[in-house]
Image 1 (spheres, rainbow, N blue to C red):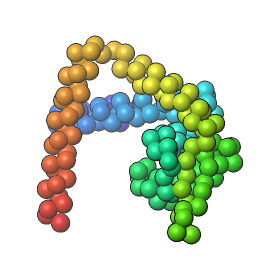
Image 2 (image 1 turned 30 degrees about the vertical axis):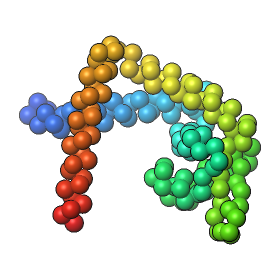
Image 3 (image 1 turned 90 degrees about the vertical axis):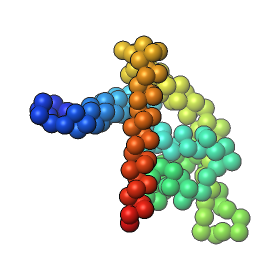
Image 4 (image 1 turned 120 degrees about the vertical axis):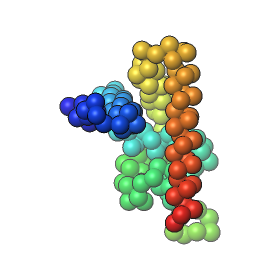
Length: 161
């Protein structure tokens, strides 16, 4: 039973819509996690870390990876250690900063990520198979409005604190 099915018709439409979006996100993410595990014997956090490194060919410092992925440095260190041991990423010292390390994909890691990213795009596309191009454009526009409202709400919260 997903969280959306617990609602009643007397709940606010906004709450019902929020839980529908959350349920869709969770279902798609569960499918992605399962497919990554089955097809590539990897996890979504590993995929996400490699995706960040793919976008920064020169590499990223560990603290920047942590910030971009919104997880603790300890999480990044554990995943990075695994990927280093598998030869998919390399860790290098940062000149002038003995405490910092730069992490980047190895050629093998780049090839591995490219294969995963291709499949990932296919899985995401399949998740939206039920929508026409017009439906997707409309949904994208509507979610943009939701995003704008959420950003404005956040700005109001920041000002009041």
